[in-house]
Each structure stands twice: as C-alpha cells, then as structure tokens.
Image 1 (cartoon, helix red, strand yellow):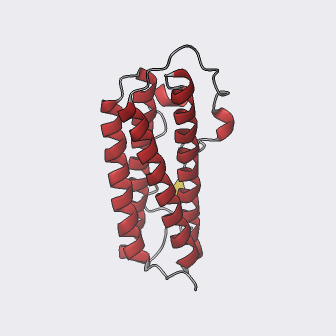
Image 2 (cartoon, rainbow, N blue to C red):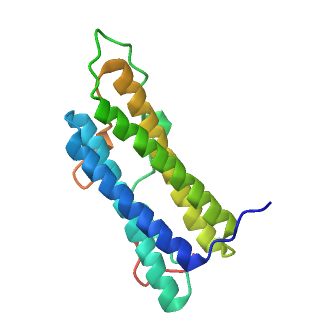
Image 3 (tube, rainbow, N blue to C red):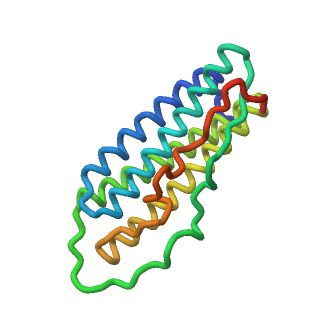
Length: 185
C-alpha cells in the first residue's frame, strides 16, 4: 500500500507547528539542563528549529501569494557527524540527571518523527521545488538526531555534555534566511 499524498499547504502548516513545538521544547530543555555545554547545545537546537519555522513561513507566504516555492540560503553548513568528538572513556562514578537523559531521549523521538514526516512530504509532494525543501529539512533533522545520539552517549559515559564551537558562536547560524522577493527553486 502506497503512502498517502500530503496536501502542500496542509503539509506546510503541519511542518510549521512541528518546528514551533520543537523550538519550544529545546528552549525548555536548555533551562532544565545545569551543564553549560548542555545549555548551549539545546539553545542551538532551538535556534535551528526557529530557523526552520521562518523558512516554512516564507514558503507559505510565497505559495499563498504567487504559488511558487522560493529559494532559501543556508548561512552555514548543517551539522555533520565528523564534527563530533570521539566517545569519551568513562571516568569514575557517574551521576547523570535522569531528567536530562529523558530530555535527550524525547528530543531523539521528536527528530525521528520529523525525519519521517519530511520524507513523506517529499515523497508525496508533486512539486520538485517543494521536494527540495523537504529533503533539506529531513537532512538537517538527521544531523540533529546524530547530535542528540552522540550527546546521550557522552552524557552516559562521562556525566557531561560535549560542546562544539558553533554552539557558542555569537550570531551562530539560526537557520535558513527567507529570500524576500526570492527566486523560484
């Protein structure tokens, strides 16, 4: 049995709500976490999801006004597993905060659901330009999932989070910029 086709505007509305909820979740997680590196990680993820929301809002505006998908620009490369540090060796007794582990696990579930949603939207959207947007989003969410998986491993083995330079950079990438009056995809 094939996948159900997703209506373009309905899919965008669902995607915007998904990204809004994800950003809120990551902001809450950033407040929950005591470790400064964990706070930076979750804050960075919240900015990423907010950037996705801005992109999707721009797509919605363009589709409603012109019926055309628009190009987005990435300010920086999406996260890649090659950026992650090697797994730490466990040191001494670990005292990991259960709520932080729960937050990471819930975030991983959410990212897996987002990947599946964007894959379905890609497969069922007839417009090639729309497919490109959904593929980009699914790929970005895969990077978030890989980051969360590695953070959970680090936290479980070392009792602390790792941090990447991009998490603490002033003006770190906040997601794609909607090109107003942009060109067609």
